[in-house]
Length: 337
Image (cartoon, rainbow, N blue to C red; front, side, top):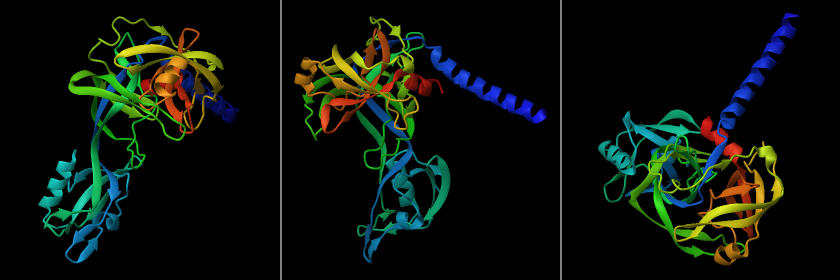
């Protein structure tokens, strides 16, 4: 009896937790769909190791970082106890070592570990550990939605990863910047197109506070993109149907237009790749302008039957008229976690 009672309690707790998670997303019943491009600037939490490379010394090649166990995709957060947040910080600490061993604190797959590296002196007399690192990035994407009650937003529908390693960029801080589309590189089979955005760093619209597998999230500090727009209901994932839909996107200047698409496949909610649906662009005007889905359109909101159902995330390389979208329910679950 006691074992049976304990089992019932455990099941009850699991159900309660599941209901709580669903309730958090369900609390947001309406959002303002945006569809305007934004510039995105992010500074990394630490310094991301992009490549390991040899140090050319008078005696030949040396590989200090590799030999110490540093791997591409690691994030260096401190050197001998001194925090580093930029490439300049890292280089300064290596130079100060004078060639003596230094202890690097790394983050790898979310876990911290320490390794000891002995810098090598290159042919010019500078001390190096043999890495190529990145401490920031900038690009263009599309703003998906804003919560009219809080000013919180979601964008992209996927995370921002380092292009060399595929590692999710460890975020220290970031900002959204007002952007316009200057030109479009049309997509062709085998060659994805791209929006060419124009933005300046002094036109900040909001903060970037989270970089996740389901998008970037933060808070708007300027309401100019959405103050005149109306909120629409948010659809549950099980409301998405194959058939006609629309996307809001900005592919010319600062104009956001509505274009017709077809939802051709709906994926299970637990899809391992995060796909909510496959869509096909059917609007001839958009096909003429871009060839279909192009880079920079990630985050374009998808609407069906008057509800926000998701956001464009990826294009099929061999068929730019088709791509994937994440469900809005999945984005909201990430935002409310």
